[in-house]
Length: 149
Image 1 (cartoon, rainbow, N blue to C red):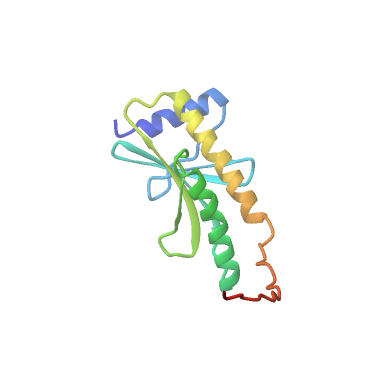
Image 2 (cartoon, helix red, strand yellow):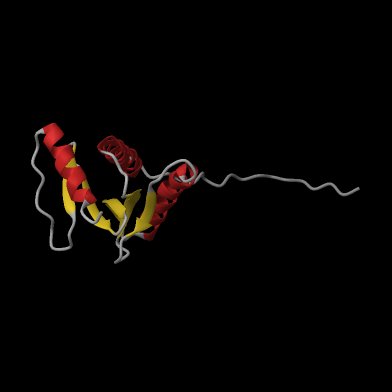
């Protein structure tokens, strides 16, 4: 069903007595959760996409490397159990996260759980972004002696 996302969003918004903005020019809907997590939603064929920008990649190489490494470590640890995918935006300037839902027989309850899980994952990843940069340990001066028999 091509309009399953619209049907689910309408049922979801009616159950919460909130309004949903119209689609943008690209056919996406946007909702903001907790005043800070903007989630874009769109449907392409039998797939519903939830997506959100996480952070702009810092210009300074050291900061960019730390941020990407930190998030990728957590993404890798969760990749087998979690449905969320960390990626770069098309222009390569932002880190984004998305989740793909199978349309077709998606019930409202399943949609609510997926949406809530996605927002929770955004909150978690955002907390990692806001954490202070890790510093590499200072090199120590090790005096080693090698004994050869």
